[in-house]
Length: 316
Image (cartoon, rainbow, N blue to C red):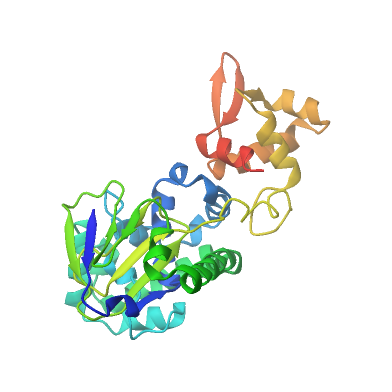
């Protein structure tokens, strides 16, 4: 649990906003544990197709064992909330500040960032920019639309009910009263935190990759993050369209749903009137995405769904 203690007038500095860099950092949780984020299963399936383009050696070192991420992903009051401006800010930061931030959250520095040569901030920003290009930019308009719709909902609530009621409407993990804002942080490894706004703007940020709420680990710019609403329909109109955002084509989605507790390539091919080689090609592609797995039953190889495949099959 983390509690912000507010001074007089601090509620006037609350800002609801979308932060691209914050979402980029939060999404590392879904890369680490995709089954924990079933609503983002189509996104994860698409990312699996471009894994060879991702700097995984850096990304895996930016999230701790308890899913803590460094505060460097959080919005800053003096930095525009665009991915270009936020990455440029990282490039300009002192090595010691960035390294201390990562070590505090994660317990160590990704090996590649510790190499000599180009500046630490440039290496970090380059890795995150590559992740953005491959895994986020193709899907960001869809993600941003959901986040903006959430902000529009909060804006209406602010006008009708005021800031305290609006914060209390951001989900059960956030509670606000006249002197404080409390965030109940799921699975945090840190002791209860008492934080202070000290007259600084406090960002309230919706996210597609959080299960409850979160705040900074240290005394960085004030932030409360909460789970964005109305996510369930975000991907349903793309599942089943071939070639869009790397998601499942219609026949692969049918295969995925037909697998049940296990089907052989031959049985699946006979069911859908295709050749065994065509069915096998689709099953191998879905296995590479982490949606199905092969197991041997005597002399027969059976395919069944992984937990991620179950979530994607049930999504629409």
